[in-house]
Length: 473
Image 1: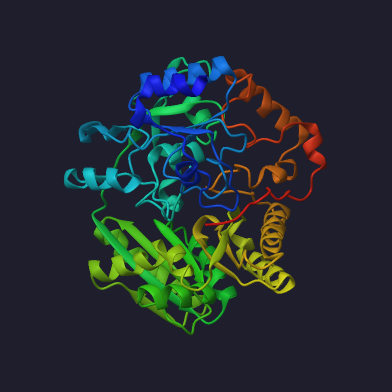
Image 2: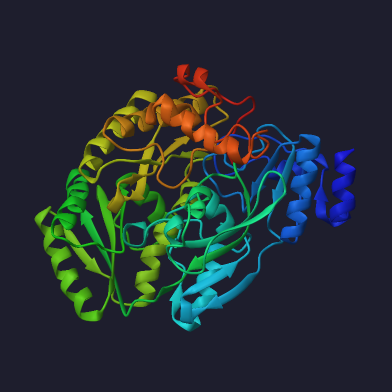
């Protein structure tokens, strides 16, 4: 039996198959769940290759998993099979400050790389809100972003090369230790492919030099529209902050009561703005940002007076999801993108959807690049609540498409948004994507049921079907 082969390959401590153990791997941060048949823990690329060859030989589906912090069901084993957990491949193999790069295994926690590079004056720029837990391998699979995407870009902008295992078990290297390697951009193709074409076993990333000066600002508003309008006003003044985050009044109260970050409890919304660069330039930009905020009727403009105060403001943003857990037993985080000029109308539309479904929806998001994160509060113990939350999320993403945006900015498609792909792309575009995927994985054993609809018939689906027994954790 193929399970026995896996146990012989990895040893008794390299596999989990008891039901009570598998339950820990049947969910991520989204609302779907499905249980693998077995979870394996490779220690190196050779073992990953052997696992894949075994799966290919027996026709068993295979799903990669980082820390399980994903929010779109990307690591959910929808068809069972083998789950490859990369938690034991967690070494930082090289930090090369002279060439501004690092080489890591996929199980390295995002923040750990920046901590390791900090004494050398560098950091790793992509910073998802879950950066204290999420892994770089998972970030590559989902092309994760974060608050500082506005200035630094998403994961793909910082990946120079990959070592991957293909569905036939072969080991391939893409990219190069320098930018703009010749040939097809296979690194860019595989980054964000959600484990449907390859399993990543080694990553060469770009390191960024720490800025000379950093200034963090909190702008406070009595109107959500004024708060949203400030984002476009800052852009119109040719200023590109490192980050512009927005929290509405609903989320502000939850976060402040949990973290005590200094957010006002009586405001309609705030902007958390960060500027980086040379000291003189940061000072000049801070004054320009102040003028932009006051022009859009900000009632207060605060500049963090110390590093401790700055970190506290960011702690409120980075720990927001945990704060929500104190208020609601369940919540559903979505991820859509709209043009900056459509932020205010989108927030109004989200408010209408909230009223229509009878569920509270708060907003905390990357306003600088229009990456919306509506958070839908519900109680899965109440009949119909989960269905209402899913329908609300579907309606929000449909609106994002209608105003010229996208159904995802950083969370990926996974299982969650697969039934919206035909609204985002033409049939011809989806067919081309399938052809590319099938070149890598003709048997479709790598993360089946993710990212792309199964075929043209899926274009008829307009509402996401509920997975039996789906829930949220």
